[in-house]
Amino acid sequence: MAEKLDTKEIVTAEELLMSEVIQSEALINLLDKKGIISKQELLEEMKRVKSTMIKSEAFIT
Image 1 (cartoon, rainbow, N blue to C red):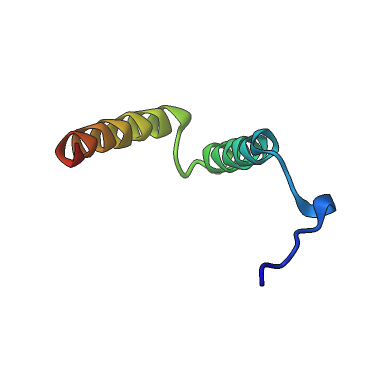
Image 2 (image 1 turned 30 degrees about the horizontal axis):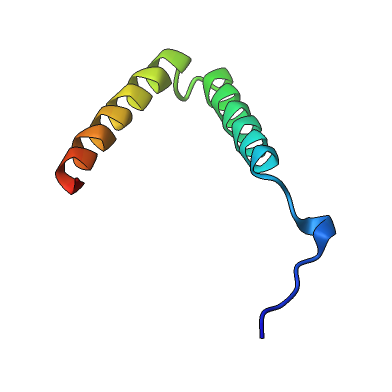
């Protein structure tokens, strides 16, 4: 039998997304502040990953 969820523990998709955005931004800021990676390097890597994902989707469909 399925367990009932506590409505106090349920979050909306918007709340979940906002939490992920805040966590990502905090990590990016810390990495940049410590000189581990610059925001420019991160943006370039994001573009590379996005391009790779788009190319792999083309093979799936």
